[in-house]
Image 1 (tube, rainbow, N blue to C red):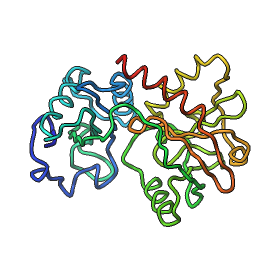
Image 2 (cartoon, rainbow, N blue to C red):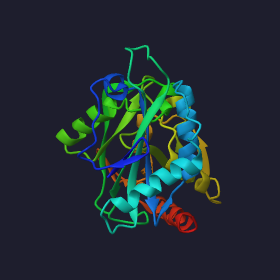
Image 3 (cartoon, rainbow, N blue to C red):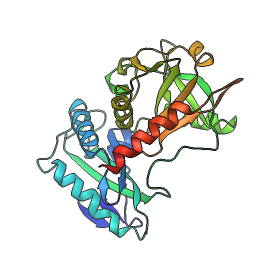
Image 4 (cartoon, one colour):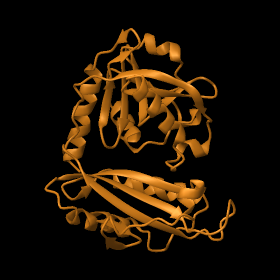
Length: 281
């Protein structure tokens, strides 16, 4: 089942018009959300990011789009997925109503919500390893739009194709200044000695919800300094540790970049603190 504008319908009944603006022009936003035991993790951060993004894209926010309304729309969908899972990956997609070409006929929106079960509840450290490479065919242009979770993700798609063809688990994206921005599916953090840093939003990285949770944890670590500054590709070879963050996987350590191997000590420590905060949610 999916939620289509507040109505529950089966997935085989769901249809998208060929004039859908999300399909035709990428005129859409989405939130990827994790639920656990009937609760939405980090819901306030997801909600306010969505509202801010809709305002930036000049979408008309419906009066009923309160946190309580959207939360109920998400949670009411979960029992209809014929799953015994306690945890779900939810995708909330908002798009401008069809009509017009580049110039829309209206700024009113429609939405749909999908959910699929996850195999694990709390966040687990990936033990299978993660080998990465730089994706340098195309670059991220830094700006406010690059920080939003729109469905204009062709760069991430091409990077993923490149990774699959060359047997990498992930790739890192660079901006037009040749600084590292993020991974294909999440924000990047680098550990060197007692400094942990991540690229600033001004470099073009996504304003990730899990990025925010991890930053809050890092600021409380007594033996480490947290900084936001540009990361050069040359720093990767000198780093002690690299890890990727997103709301579905939590923290995903990078283990190999070219001839350099990394440990996962800090990743494990932060993951334990993250799971502790999730348990208290």
